[in-house]
Length: 200
Image: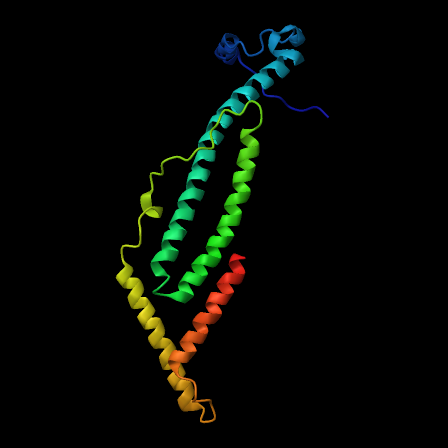
């Protein structure tokens, strides 16, 4: 089978002479293994050099982030402690949840600090495990709107009282000997006992 090819005229050949100005194929007959960029050993040296530079940059960033984490853990502990003391006499159910979360975060922070101390003891460690100064001061601010917390506690107690009254109206066979004050004291006693168990 003979394929028909278009015939080139002399004018077209003269127009195609601009291809000679390109040097894309120049030196294609040379042995590329003789060039420095084709040397495998130089490839390894170059890759190692860039990896070292990247590792140095990563170490600088990690040293900063370690300080961030330690500062955040410390600020969070202070914030939770302040919140416990602020709402302890206002909303016992809320302070129970705060203390429960605080105990969990304390265990979490202790594990991280142990890891940071082991890291700081390694030879060649260039960072610091000292506390920094946080730009976000929200964890340092004490409860400014304590009045709102008191209102929430009053609403909560009122809601519990309404539900108790509804239950007494619905069930005639319920025990009416215990007063709401006794129920609150019993609830607080159970709460204090539960907090003591969690702290131990």
